Image 1: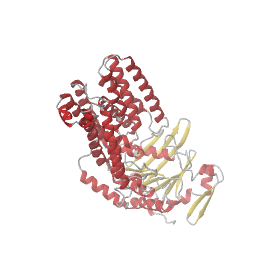
Image 2: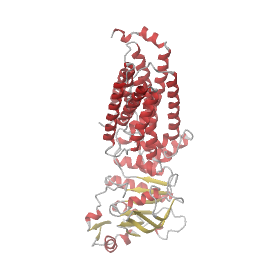
Image 3: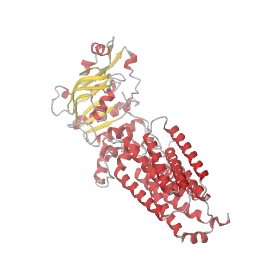
Image 4: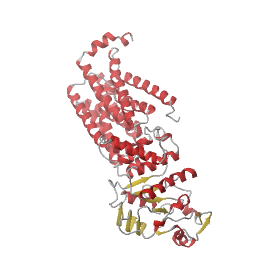
Length: 282
Length: 279
């Protein structure tokens, strides 16, 4: 459970999949984070942790180009974030899709490939179908890809979400609590798919989560955000009583039990089982 | 009731130019409604279509009172309504109630305008329940231009619009301008609704804009197949409704709604039997 991947250290300044320097994000008086420097190397798996309102989702929004930094610079997949950045894949939280929605898993994956492009997309249908089929195959979803997506289980939907994010062959994968509301087996299935991708294709993964344990064996580095303070480092550096106590400015105890990490203290702030976060402001 | 199924009379009436014009209008409307319908259903916009059509009625009534072209009035009313409703967030809890409030007020204003209108009573009734007479060539040209415009815009925005309709969160993350598309789509729906008001009447535009697509979505989950079926159902409803209304001389909307409702019930049963719905 504690095996560390080999490529975690000394991420080069150039060629980083994600690169933030002196990044500051503030809403009026309220500073979510400031002076954030983060370089994520290709193939690296970075977990973003922290309580609600600490700016985890806002960081994702910055990398997706939905939110501008107050100051500092950001590069994602070698370009400015935003529309047309084809190097970015995105996996959202699992949310119950409307059972009556007239869309199949195959269509959902296809939209991940070219749904952002204008026009009807009448050319290259065969190539498109082949790429979509390959992505569906890679997450082992062929058996249910032609059923209405709203009728699928949460785990099945989330596997299709992985295919949807990967079908465009991204070099950076941004994940917003993708394991939330999945059972343990499906959490493992989905995180294994993400892990396989970054090992095979060198896709960098930025993984926002409340709960590090399901992905702990995969995590190279942790970015832990609390009230404008943050710490970046290996899990065994950041997830310690000393570091978290400094971040939370209160007594925190980190207990390791059978390869898992449990954070004790300041429950109302940690809220590991209180997942809702605000997409408009958070 | 005796001439309800008088086929001889129906055939005679089908030779009349204004009836043939109405049938062409029905085909165009069927195409428009059929293509827009699945997106309307995906976006849960049935009530907003109803609100838009009621404001198209208000615009038409105002035009009637002022002696302007009813079609232009309906178009203006529907586009204003579409812009207002399109600017409201779909997620907002106010959305439904604001539509209800605006719809009721618009309908009331329209009723007042009809009360002041001293012209032919059939014009008033026709605005609410549809008519085939009075489709002159000027309004026909407007219809064709509007329909062509809607299809042209749709051809450009279809893919991102579908993405934004079925999967808004990921679409936004992928850079699709979800909010702007909502506004553009609301205007497209407004234009189509206004055209429908002229034929089917303000009260029952839903029978063309929503019912065929809702029926199609009961039997398939493929967006392409849903669109093809929705167009087919809308064409059958619109054209069939006009043909059936000829002999009895009854309002078109009664037949359009009846046909589309039967199609919906059949599709619902088929979907149920094939396990395509959960409830």
